[in-house]
Each structure stands twice: as C-alpha cells, then as structure tokens.
Length: 620
Image (cartoon, rainbow, N blue to C red; front, side, top):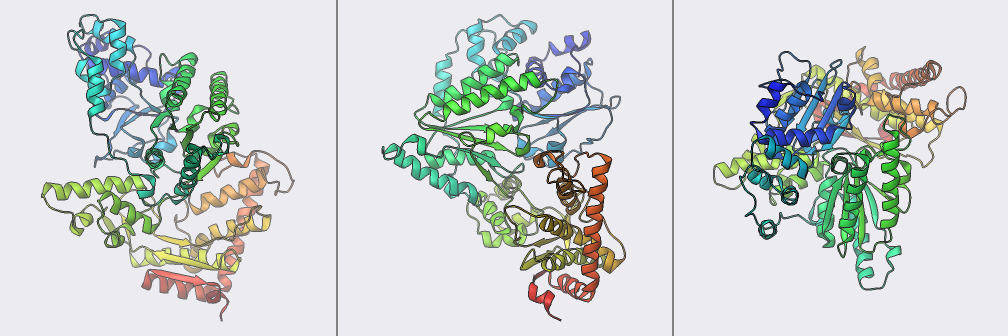
C-alpha cells in the first residue's frame, strides 16, 4: 500500500471531500497491518458505513495505487478492491491466491462477507468515524472556512449521516449539536426481539435464563453480585447470530447495550498504543457509568495473544495486559455483564478464557432443519414454518444471516405487488438448483452409506440418519449432496482407539466409493471442514499433541494443530501411516459387507432418506 500519493491524485482528491475524509479514516484503520506497514501481500477486510461504500472504494483504490485521476487502473495492476454489500445480488469472486498481490475488501457488515474471504483475511477491521483533526484538515484542503477544534469534535461525535450533511457547510456556528442529539434520541428505536422470542440459539437461552433469575435476585438484595455468573463468550462461525444475541440478550434483561470491538479501539485517535488503550478504557467506563449494562465486545480474537512472536509483540502484550486488568476489575462492578463473540477461539489468549473473565463458553451451532424454517418464519412475521420446511430443508447449511437476507428478498417481492407473502414468493427467492445425474446420486449415496456402516461397525453410534439431495445449488465450489448424522458415543478423555475410530469413519465415504465403484471422487475432500480435513487434523493432533506417535512426545498445543499445521518430516510420515491404516481398515469393513453397502445405497437413492441401526448391520 502507498504511504504517499502522486501530486495529480492529491489535486483530484481535494475536489472530493467525502473521498478525502474516507481516505483519512481508512488509513488510520489499516495502519497497523503488514500490508500498510511493510507493503506485504495479502487480503484486508474493512467494515464501513453502508452509505459511504463508494467513497471508501475510491479511498481504497488510492491507498493501493497512489494513482491520479481514476486513482486505480484495475487492468494494469495485480491488486484489487472488492465490494460486498448486504442485500446485493452481485457476489464478486475474490481470487485470494494471487502472488505478491494486495486486496482490500470493503463490506457494510460481517454478514455480507463470504466465508472464504473471512478465512483468507489477514485482518478484519471496522473503520471508525474520522477524528476532529481529519475534519479540520479536509475543510482546509477543500477551501472551506476554518472551524474551532471543539466544533469539529462535536461533529465527529455524530453519526455518519450527520457528518455527511455538515462536513462542507460554510459555517457550523449556528448548529445546535444538543438539538441534533435530541432529534436523534426522539427517533423511534429499532425494534429488537428479546432472546426468548428468537428461534434457535438454545444454548444461549439456557445461560441467559439462569442469568435473568440471578439478576432478579440481585436486584431484590437476595443475592450478592459476586455470586452472579456475569461473563460469557459466544463461539460460532460467521453469520450464526452472535452479534444479534448481544442485542437480544440486553432486550431480554431490559438493560442497555454498550457494543464495541477491538477494531474500534485500534482505529481510535492516531492508532498508537496509547490511543488504543485509552479507547479501551473509555468503552469499559461508558458501560460502568450506567446503572447496569450488557458490555459486548465483538471479534474478541483480534485483541491479540501474548503467545504470538511477531513484530507487534510488544504492542499486543501491552494491549492484552490492559484488557485482562479491565476484565478482572469489571467483575466487581455490580450490574456489569461482559459478553464477547468470536469465530476463532483458538486465537484468543488463554488468560482471557479463564474463570473470572470470559468463563462461560457458549457454542452457537448452525441451525437445525427445523430451526431454519422457524428462523425464516420469524423474519417473515410468522408465516407458517411448516409450510417453509420443503424449501429450507433443501438449503445448503444456511446461517441465520443468510435466512434473514432471504426473508428481505421475499418481503420485497410481495411489497412490490402490494399484497401478503405467499409460497410463490418463497419459491422465487430460493437459490436456483440443478439436478444430479443418476450416476452422481449413486456415488453420493454409496459415500454416505459407507460412513453409516463403518460408524455402526466401530461401535461409535447406535443409529445413523442418512439423507440425500437430488439437486445442488447452482454455484461454483464443492457442495455436500448427502449427510450422515448420528449421536456419537464420545468420551471426556478420548483414547487412541476412539480417535482412530473417528478417523476411520471420516475416511469411510472415500473408502466406500473405492470398494463399490472402483475409484474416489473429490466428495469428502477439497475444503476446510471436509471429511479428509477433519481426519487429517485428528491424526496430526494424535502425533503432535497427544503423544500417540511412534515416540510419545509433545510438539504443539492441540488447539493450534489442524490439517494445515506443518509438521517435521518424521512426524508427517507417522500421520500418513495412521491415515493409510484406517483407510485400509475402513475398506476391509466395507468389503466384508459390500452386498449391504450396495443394497442400502440403492434404497437411499430411491427414498432420499434412511435411518440405519445396528440391527441392520448385524442381521444376516
């Protein structure tokens, strides 16, 4: 990224106050990234105000190229600026594997980001409002009369829309900022559903229900604050509703919500360490100033980890030490509920997760088929969930955010025709699907029945529910066309035998294809979270973390070891032996039961769903 711009670009940007202000705010947000500091390649995501996206797009192009006039010539540079906007039908493709290239992704919310982009991003940052000095600089450079620093500070305390309206006004002396605040306060608040009114999120509701009981007892003086479980961390993939949970929890508890993120702290002031720490303390103090409050910190994993050995180690250590201090001190503040959210819990410093800080870890899983219909029904103002099941059951693991976006499209169709929502609207907004060939259906069925037979044979489950989809969503990328679901007999302390069984079951789909069809497809592989990815991760943890290799040794923490974790050649060969052995064991089981494998896969193709139990495997 360019720290300087050309003279021609500077002359051009002076004519565009909005772009100039967006450039100042963007530079401040990304200044600590390796892409800005060291001009390193990679992808950076910035979350900005929706109405300001075009200005930040121009600012990003300028930051990458420093060029004149159009700032950025996509046809002559290997770099790119990509926009993802909530509700937009346009979903641009992002090539994250371009050597020595830089990409800035601009989005108006985390939910607008594809999973690939979030995984590939070196940083996901929220661009905060500009500083007062940015306002003064923009007015001077664009030829507007000077204003007092105090007035500029009052302006940046307003929302983006107000900044937009007043930035270039000739004089701000007559603006009554107190009246502006009263006008904003008089605006009807956005309706937030209580947690108890939302479908899904059962794990969160259980904790929140207990918390509500304790809070009531505390308010009545029947329970000391020290006995209230007052902190939790929400863990789940993007789009599962972690941020929405915070607002709904506050509504349920009838408490104000104070929401922030590490990105907001990092982009405060000039972005130096002192600015970051002051912003962090201000956020805590803001929540403390209220009689009671839910204090929500989004993207908790981006605060830092003292185990990191990077060029920013001193910075991260100081930030983390201050954060830990504030978390510990705030535990004694009556009425202060601490809530965090992350989709990368392994990146969080262990001291943050201990008792007394974020002590309750609540995993938010993707919605079940029944919950999908209930969530869509909720967003459609109660349109019957049972009438939606035939559509939502065919969706490819949608998140609550995906379903909310879909509901807006459905309501828009009905609104355009000035009528109530009907099933035709729902059907029209479903993703376009393409049918699978008979040959592909048989392969997918064989793959899933392979999982079922080996799971039952290994004693890992008593019953396996298998389902098959005759169509796939018309889009690029690998998609699952079948699922094998079962309640696993997991243990608190898995043994080598049980871990090998897990690997064997994960590899059984590929093994079934080879046994019954003579070769394997890419099904069960090719993407993070696939059968092969999970099996490889287990095998690597066995060798590198659990001491189950040829030599009982510890190489790395299990939390950091996944399928892509690099191992020395000696350990890598041990992993290969485990994987190959369990793949062969799966094939032996399936060869011995090949007739049943064929019969059940044919039945699955015919019926679409099967429930296979131990008796089906044990019977002759």
